[in-house]
Image 1 (tube, each protein chain N blue to C red):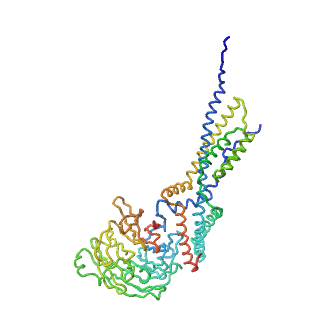
Image 2: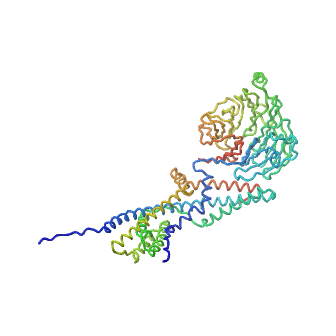
Length: 372
Length: 260
């Protein structure tokens, strides 16, 4: 007797279902992951390991100073936050023999994201210019006594400010910038000791000593800049100086409470936001009344076209974790936020569509801002 | 003379047959409903998949192509960098995969799946009458399978006329004629019940599988967005297009030429 044919029940009307989600599955999954419908944030790993010195460009590139363990020594790594590909490695010639893993550095992106200026204790005491598009070191310009801690460009790329600290001889240098090395001209240099108010220094007593310049931010009209005059000591208060560009004459002095860690002008240049001792503040462009904002924050960055600012705060009262948050500067309402820790830099893209934040451990937070 | 009207009591197999026929009727209705649910779900997901590939998948394919070009350019500039070479190979493989996943969809016009109450009624009727699990005869089963597959396609196309034709075609066929005899009929009914229960289990498994798919998650999110007056796929497509613009400008930076 021949074996009975087994009924093929499973074949009944199945043809359509196999097509569903087979062709599209990887694309659908990708869309769901990359564009979470209820969140504007994406979190990804920009790099592995730990970096102390990071700078984000307005195009979503992250420059890091490698600690010497890599093949290119104390070179520069440029990571693309959008594409997540292997970094562009830029080796810097003439690395000092004394350079070690504890080398300190500062990095400053030009507004277009094409040029990067860097300084490091592992290299000769000059500013190093890197062409980020070509991934090449272009050469050096200028010189300094103390390694700058902070480098920043003005909005159009006309000026570059370099802030150094560590002693009274900490200085602020103002450079005129150009497309190539020969176009970088030193316009002025001022030492912290020359700008410190004698009375304040005396008043400080044992509260701290003059430490140099911390960070700086150019006014949108590029006619002035705000620079932080730092004082060493746990209980000392920094000052923010409004200086005329390019002569670096003092226009106003703003007293801060504690150490200033973040500085950003509003898009119209009418307000200056800053973070001091974990608290956000705002003052008018003339350096008048300082108002405390209802936010705890350590880093701040104003949106290039809209009345929005982004803040980072490393701790919350209700949790040990920190957060990045976006607030409306008119209503003071937080419109979006994301848990984050160890953020070293925060930057809006040049078109204001993205906010980039990168942490010491390489975690990158991308906030996609929509008009609505 | 008195006459006594004697009523013949039903035989045990007839009583059992009546019970089973009642159960069959109930299961037929349930099966028709479940088939409708499954066909509707497939229809909705199929339409969503088509729209997704058209509006989001195609821009993704374009984006992946641009990224592959950027990666290949970077790799070409530094041939000794193995990481760049690997990244370029991976980017090209991804671009090829995205292109082939969306290639079929380029020419198709995506449609929304929104079956009318009339077509749903017709589909239920078809499922009740010609479902393959309602027969024990192998030849009849094969014919029903064929017609049911046609009915599914017609339902997903929203083709009422064809559904009616399928129904008529089966009703007028000799396979639609049923035999007599309580004992034989009881066996047929019991087998049908078993087949229907088995099919119901399969439908449940299939619905579960579809409900666990990424496409279904996309459908839920899309429905939620729709309730808020948003079009999720349009939003996603817009974001992919922005990335395309970014990638074009990155490629322009590398090549110094305008990328169209």
